[in-house]
Image (cartoon, rainbow, N blue to C red):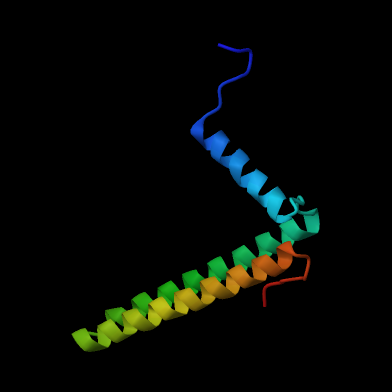
Length: 104
């Protein structure tokens, strides 16, 4: 045994990923406090929007009895969740880059 500390598979994988990032020219910059705050605001906004959509969806489902109509409502709800999730992720990426990705 050597004096070097043994590393877990996770630590080794993270080292490899960091090395690949350095080789690819990806810069590791910590987020500023303003960026952290903007990201938190964006996440809170979209969490509230998703919760609102969930409540409306459940309310609509409760009044709908036809299987075809319910299936269409489910599909529409999934599309809306995906749209809101994508929108949230784009704004968070913009905030990380410092482009001011504020919530609406």
